[in-house]
Image (cartoon, rainbow, N blue to C red; front, side):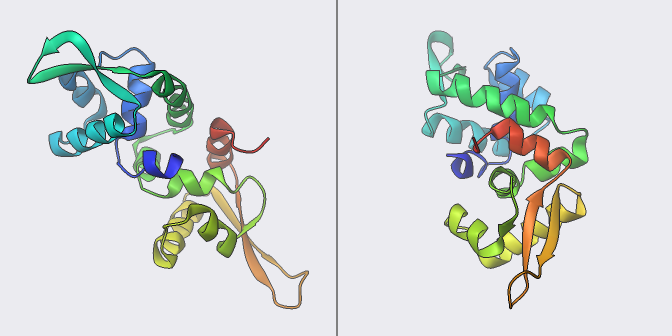
Length: 174
């Protein structure tokens, strides 16, 4: 679900805003996200398809509908709000909006090998994973260490700093 949710750039921000009480109409949400209309519309449609948002029956103009969180959407929006709350600035928010950043941080609570991350995320390519890991390392949200305890040394990745806060906000690990 997390991989699907973060596949559209503005999904987390839209859910976090609605969780905070922003009206579920396009104009207030677009103004609050500063997204382009096409990117916003794509993210909104995506959230409807995931079953996290629904049109509010009887409210809004047919061409300008109002949306509300579904029961599942309420719980996911609370997590999205926690994730967005850990982001200190616009630069960090741009990283969060990337496809794989949040799912990678979600599974790196403990030192994790590249191959394990790849298998956990399923559809990610080696190149996309490598680029995402480098971006998260540059932001100092992920720490790369070389494990030399085995005959063939290998790198492991661990969420740190704001990356660890995002991991805890998602709370996949017990």
